[in-house]
Image (cartoon, rainbow, N blue to C red; front, side, top):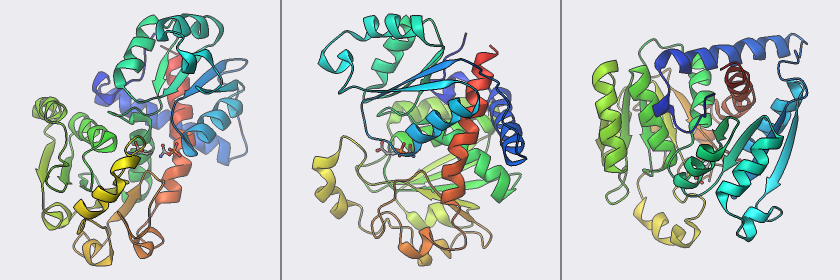
Length: 305
Ligand code: CP
Ligand code: NVA
C-alpha cells in the first residue's frame, strides 16, 4: 500500500505512470466511456481548509470511477472538536478504501497516514500540493509539448513552489523561482530538491529577479500571494510583492510559445493581470479540468499497489 503525501516519495517512472493512466482515463471519458475502475469503493475527503477544485474533482472523480466520495468538513466531524488524529485515522480507514486530506500542518497528514490502513492522499498542506502538480504536468504534456521545459515560477515561496521543486527535481527539468526578498522557499526543501536534482539533472534556480526567471521560459506560473491561513498578512504582502505581477510585459520576456499556468484561485491585478489570465497563452481552465483526470489516474494507480 502506498500513500501520496509528497512527490519526494515517488520516482520519475511512477509520476509519469500516474499521469499516463490519468490521460488514458481522460481519453476514455471523452470518448463516452466511464469504466468502473473503483466500483463500490469509498473515498473519505477531510477538509480543514476551503476548496473548490479539490473537492469537486475528487468527488466527481470517484463517482465517475464507480465509487462514492464522502465530504467531511472538520466543522462536522469530531476531528474539529479535538478527537485525536490517530483515532480518526483508524476509524475512517476501517470503513473507507482511500482518504484525501486538506489540512494545515504537513505533520498532521503524516500522522494520519501512519495510522491509516488505506492509502492517504495529500489534497494540500501548508508545505505541499502534489496533486496539483500532477494536473500541471499533464497540462504541460498536452499544451507545452516541450521535451525540455523551462518553468518560471513568480511569487511566494509556498506549498506550490515546494511542489514545483520536487516535480522538477524528480523529472529533471529547469525551474527558476523568483520571489521577493523575505519570501524565499524553505531552505531545507530547496536543499532536498537540489540533492535529488543531482541525479535527474534538473536545474533549480532561485532569484529575486522576475526577469531572470522568465527570460526564455516555456512555462510561466504563479500563485496567490497570501495562501489559506495567511489572511492576516494580506495587506503587508500586497506591498511586499509589488513588481511580482505576471502581466503582458513580463510574459513578453518568456518564449513566444510559452504557456501560462495557475493552480487557481487567482487574484486578478495581484499575482496575475486579467489580460494574461484570460489571454491566449493561458491554459488555466484546462489545467483546472485536469485535476479531475490526473487524480482519477492517481486513485486507480494507488488501488493497484
Ligand atoms: N487549486 C486548488 O487546489 O484549488 P482549490 O483550493 O479550489 O481546491
Ligand atoms: N498556495 C495556495 C494554493 C491554493 C490552491 C494556498 O495554500 O492557499
